Length: 89
Image (cartoon, rainbow, N blue to C red):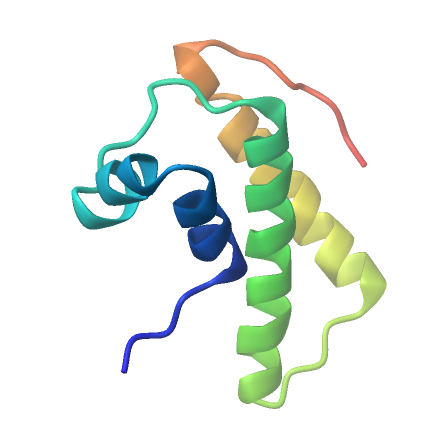
């Protein structure tokens, strides 16, 4: 049985065709809006925290903030092929 995320279900409720293009055909938007960028940053950081916990590594807040800031810098440099969102938490 497939598992669906909250964002997948919300996308389907908003527009079944958008769901189909995005999740089934893997057609992505060329530009990522700020909300999607921030959401992916939070998701990546929480994923690291979860993955490390599975291997019994407990990250400090400082470790997670360092990871977040490094990921922010890496991703913000490639959004739209332009250097943007050059901020730190």
